[in-house]
Length: 114
Image 1: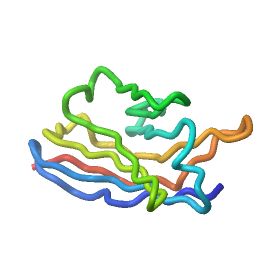
Image 2: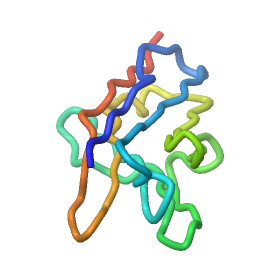
Image 3: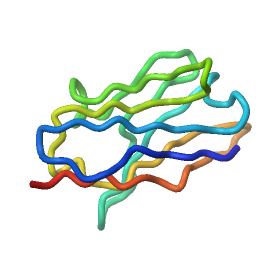
């Protein structure tokens, strides 16, 4: 499974971005998939995910601001981020567990700064 995240960039506080995750095959349209992030000097943390039964989980820090979605026809997973804060600055990684292995994309940098 090869994952490719895109859509990061520099945005002002209060702004919005949408990240996309693409993968070969149809891996993203089934089962768990999600987004993690890692800020400098901090551990990688879960941001949002689809669970195996299709429900969603969000980190408390992003609830009400971020939305994870998937386009099964295009085999894409999105992370829509609104009301961005400086503390959202991090490298964001697409994540897909499959056959007992965690697959990660290379990550995309999100910087929230004025």
